[in-house]
Length: 464
Image (tube, rainbow, N blue to C red; front, top):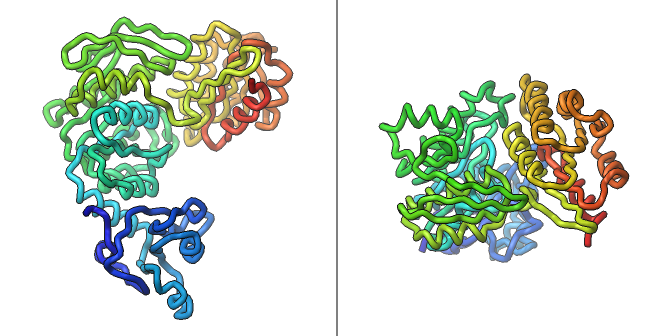
């Protein structure tokens, strides 16, 4: 059995059992009393605005079998009240979480695929996991739970899976290093090196350095990279003797390449050799970047010796995590592209290119990109150039730095088709006023702008 007993948990976390049964086995874990399930082990995490340790009793009331807490004093009366539960006190619940996840990972001798990169992590994870699941029972990161809390909880979900697909995010040095020490991946994927978090890290070269921390905890059975990315291309040329590097790409000569590409509004096709046989692949999402994601999944499939027909099926029926390139068809032919989960220069560029594929009138609703520091004005202006390059008909820019997008776009576009808004509350009324039948509307901004909420409100306006 690979589930942890209370005795295991005490040993691994160096905790103290205040009350409970050392033989009890914990099979599932939670940090949220609102979604806790019967029998869960609740781990109290102290956040910036709240302390989960204070809700230990609520967790037990809601069905938790076990709680792990720090810095709380529990009276004898309450220990007697919860004598049929397990209460463990540790010095630091976050460190306890890391230790438990590392221990759980050590019990499994299976392929663990770790994915990082400036953009495209979640969509690449989705398509890779779908391909892998056609042959193996697969665990994958849910949503974007890719940080120092989400990743350990993902590892703790391991049961009888044969492969795990784990997403790793970061915005500072040292964060990927921690995650890879927990996940101990056997296959590492780096999707690209762009400008996300450049304000924190100072340069794209430093972003590459931070992403390469993924190799520190890896068994390095294979390192898979997007060879079209300039910095990754240079890195693989300099390090091909040191690692088993597998490359994929469209432009640069790579191990796995796409040819005969046909891009459409919400799908694409290409041909590619899988296991040395030429195959035609259908991708159910528009955009060249999703062809790269598919090529990455094919590379993983070959490494794991998955048959070509299963690889193709995994690509052709995969579904994206919500708020990423969701295309919703509404009344009167109106379409909404909700890609508002996050934004960087690279993902803005990719989304605008997808929008450009539509024949109808194109409206881009663009907001601020965060964590760009001193590079913010320059990178927002580059987005403005992409708006012009992709022949967008109407631009709505909203946010402190999004005005730089509009400033550049106005130089080439009709000024009456460029709107600069100060508040997100102004977006919906403006769209109600200007949208016509068959318009296609893209929503794109960093998550903190909450454009996904506006997209959902606008969808409600014109629901069929």
